[in-house]
Length: 235
Length: 252
Image 1 (tube, chains in turn red, brown):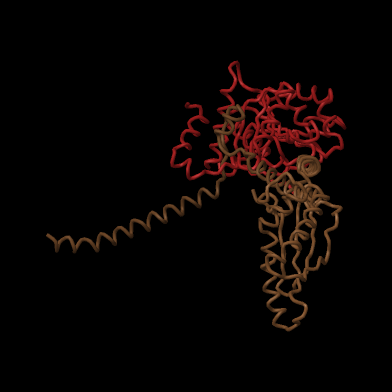
Image 2: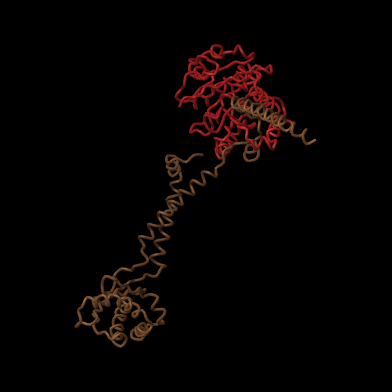
């Protein structure tokens, strides 16, 4: 299965409604926590191909637009896509820092188009991602990066996989964002992903409904407005 | 959700345990009911040949005899004969009850009448069938004045019951339970709800909705289509107005 390259809505079409949607997600995340902002965020989903990378990338761009220094980490060490979206080389990255002790400065790439945004790609695909992510080196690296950047956004693999990559990363970050692909993922999958994350003690911030189609009924009923109002924090 | 053959096979694979348990339960139920609950029924048949008068061997006679066969069949099933059978065999039922289990089969091509008796006991079924034959034999002369009644085949004691047929019942139960199992699996699959709306996330998942991301391009296209149709509607209305206007002036 070839993975689609995520689109940079926020960069390529900054005035589009999609850009606005990510900006509103950004501000909603800001208000999810009472004492201060969420400084590290994991973006995951219950199943693959729900649009995690798209949300993570565009959210990171939207956060950088707000004047923060943001680091986007591709934590999906099995099927990385972040480097494809930004058209970056991926021969060094997260895995090479952890395995070969490559210098951080060589791996972190700042994106010119988005001021304040830096990207740490996955690096070469390693045979044991779960071990890498759960290692002491990863904890140390994460602690160091948290000092350097205002916000860290991690794009991870999906939760309902036989491996625990996403759950390991979820315990490290302050908040977890669950991307839900509308109309494709069953409720039981999403809820079991939620329970798994909660079992690990992850702090679930909320969900982002992706690929949402507007139904005619919801238009007539005005549910759209209600949704927009609730999602933008008015209600 | 589309259901092609492949997806149904996948579904069956996933719910195999459920379907197997359902099938085993249904087959077991059908088997135990047909072996232990239902009373077995045995069928005994006796056939009688009525030849008419032996002296006149004209074809006409045979033709008449063929017509008579039907009559004989009805005579066998008459209560007069049945009562005699009940009396002779000392059965604990009335003639009417007995006749419910007795059938006669006649064939327009032959002169043979067959008596078919079903009963819960093999021996009793045989006795009744033979009893009917004998009683008919004894009475036919006084009724019809015919003497030439030949007991072609005396009823034999049947070894296997005609009903219930446990194997047949179990096979039917297996087929039905298989279909039901697959149908229930498909229904359950259809009942499973995909996450679609903000309401699903907020109410069913108990998660705050941080935002929605929609598709960009389809919405643009839809807007275009809408404006087009809106223009169409206005031009249509304008045309209508032009048509109506002169008419209204005429009325005034």
